[in-house]
Image 1 (cartoon, rainbow, N blue to C red):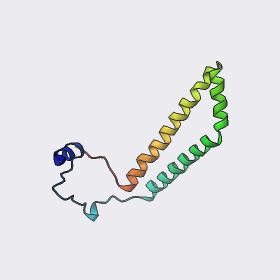
Image 2 (cartoon, one colour):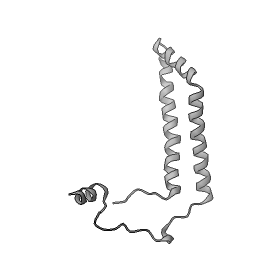
Image 3 (cartoon, one colour):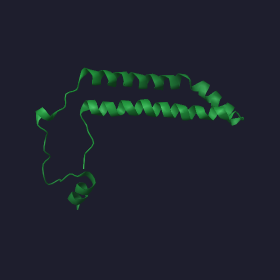
Length: 105
């Protein structure tokens, strides 16, 4: 039963040993990809730092939104969009540099 479940869910047959890729199949990671990953990582860290340093300002915006200034309710939506875009791009690039690719059917 365990073998059937792992084969259906993960596509792995536990009765067979895993096959390793030959060394020539490992993708070459160029300097451009590494540099782009580093830039996106630093940008992501900078965004998190700015968020934590400006917490009091964001609390003031939230308080203003509670008191009727509804335009300030768009601030957290914009922040979430920017974080999602930058951090998501960094994460995808990071896994590509490490050589992990999604399984194709």
